[in-house]
Every structure is written in structure tokens, then in C-alpha cells.
Length: 85
Image 1 (cartoon, rainbow, N blue to C red):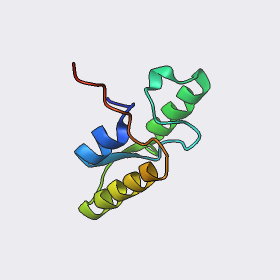
Image 2: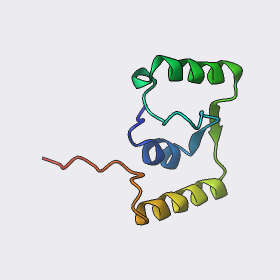
Image 3: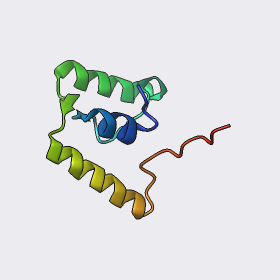
Image 4: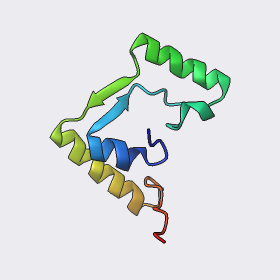
């Protein structure tokens, strides 16, 4: 899964998001998490409180608009693309 560009490659392209991901843990490859954070994430997945959810068309458009707004305000939402060679 493309964690580095989660918003563009997963949320915006596929129209799903991880609902219930623990707020204290950044969305990234679970293999890079500390042991404690990995256990927290595993517990939320096992309990079903963290799960994939499909976004409605309205939710998806709102998410895209929010992402653009965040980028315009200087937050890096999208990882820059590598230059083509």
C-alpha cells in the first residue's frame, strides 16, 4: 500500500479511507512504527474500530477540496512526484 501518498493514491483514487486509525499514530507503513504504536494499531484492527470505509461521492469531493485547501495553506498533503528521467 502507498502510505507515503495515502491521500492521493488511496483516498482520492480509490475512494476509501481508514476510519478509526488511532490519531496519535501517523498513517504510514506499520513496519516503521514503534512496538507500542504497532500494538495499539493491531488492537484497533482486531477490535474492528479501525477499518476501511468507502466514501460517498459527496464525502470524496469534500475530502479532495479539504486536501487542496491544506496544500494551499502550506501543509504537505501530497508527496512530490519524482522527476521523470
